[in-house]
Image (cartoon, rainbow, N blue to C red; front, top):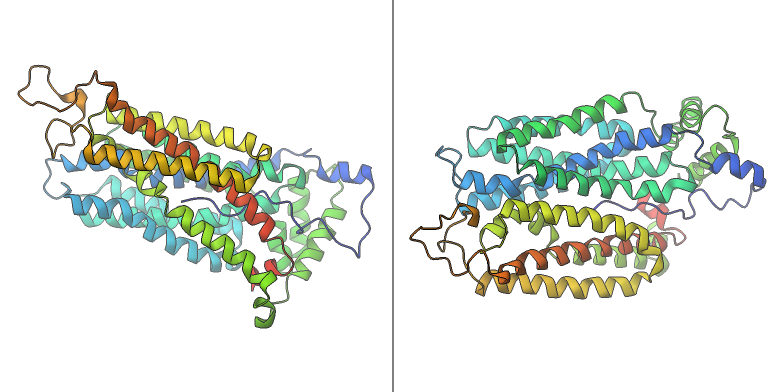
Length: 435
């Protein structure tokens, strides 16, 4: 599950024929990130993405623990474990759809802050769970919060950032989501499953505390006719010494131009619907690649195979590789063609996913066919006879295949987003999306 479109410096604030362009000195004053408050506001917002990444993979270390729980009310069957992992996506879908209304009803900042309510409630339910229904409800609520933040935060960040740093700040939501996942995998090595849920409350509380002191999006305020408040918000974000008049007029003009709704006749124009159709199909196929199930059930996947390292360690290693890959992808994306990079990444992902599937099905098994106990718990003198010993380097196959799958999976989204930014920059498309 990935973050929405970001980082585009398309036609939104760039081309306004009826207004003269600023002088080079004015451009420097407007575009230079002289005020660091915009970075603070971005950090406060993307803590929601951190919580999203954390909640997404929460089940990875928790499912194996609950499958061996001595409490009959919490011991999970395979069917229950499947529901526990997958119900998050149902909540995310509901949260994403709700964002379509809340973004314009409450505003970007208040929508992000509102997501803290279901998120905190969900973590509390899972931390104090004494029945399967509490786990499911908590997981659904955190999914709803994640879907809401995934749709609202990129909009907020792109609307408060200056054009000069919009691309860099546009990468922070995905980076924070990946860092949140890595934090969960790392804490899973140290904390029991209930305390993992308690730890998830921390970023949510810090987020809502910081956002309480941040301004709303100037663009949203202008769209609601609150011009004076929008001017104050923009001045706070840019700094008292920055000339914001030209940027303020740009945003005003852009809001006016996009306030008109597109007719169905215009929407049927191939120049309008084709870019949207291409973007939707690519996004749908991207999700079918299976990254979300791999992340959600990462430790159970390693538990089901004979692995060289303990499954918890394998999951943490994959999380670290995933974070490293995001950084590399952000730095190298502009050096390659988008379409070529998509084909190369998809090919490597296909090979890695196929290798992992074949290994799980035909490869060495753990101690017993139905066991999910890691190899670190197998006694040396035990009676069980695993089909592969811990010293067999063949057991590195699932770890390497998963790392390749995760690494290449992180490149298509960035290329996909940049391609979509180009497609959605076609005339009339922005009006259709806002209709």
